[in-house]
Length: 312
Image 1 (cartoon, rainbow, N blue to C red):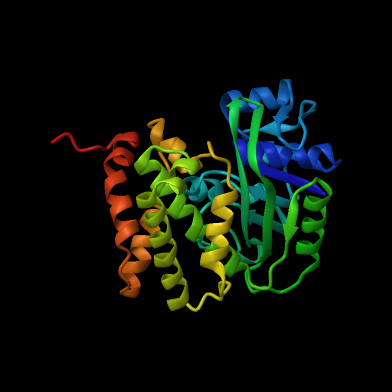
Image 2 (tube, helix red, strand yellow; image 1 turned 135 degrees about the horizontal axis):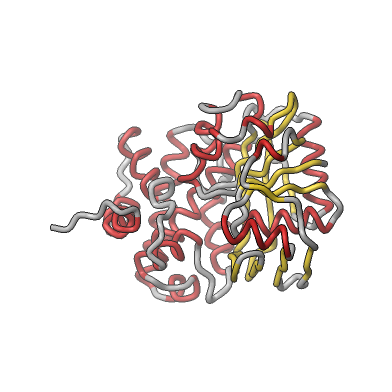
């Protein structure tokens, strides 16, 4: 398949490198030092599943230089989705599938506001990885996983073909019965772990070991479950218990990408994770006190990172 990776951060670089290694035709849309590294040196991956390097790959900061592709994996941060969607038109052929892999559940609607909705899939991913430096990916935990599907859950050939290409690359792939449920299950988990990790400035092992932070994590999960239930999202009946079990298996020293961004003073996905939980709660009339606490405690740092912090 001819696949565009829109955004060459940790996830985009990892998945793009895995697809290129397995023989797919991969094109990267990237910027700055990352663009130069991919063009000149390729991508080097350090992973508990085996280190590997792919040679220099086609890359550009202009989607028009790439042209139509079979699929776009959208791997930018969630707050960058509208900008990416506005630049995506040159990549779209008549059957191009656009797979958003952001944390949160709002990316499909944001994409559909800028590109024809027929192109947009639902999707989510699980993996812990980051860039050590431009073109160098550190995969530190959680076997790479992607769930994808049409927004109406129809089983189409383009979804089947993309799933097969991802699976050939070594990514665990699922086409769930209801993609919205998979997206919400990820959204509930990542918002809890990201907000809590950012507020506590602590890795996963510490968060689950201390009784207070563990209880806050459980409370945040249950708040998200109540929102999903009100929206009639069919998340799994055993979701809270399964999520706690998954939390137990995460690497002791692991951190979420939003947490790392906030701790480093960078703009983050706060608005599309804890902020979105608060907005859903207000709209539905369901209290979300844990998420509200995390959101409002972290908001001053987010505003400062974006250059609009209050000075007094």
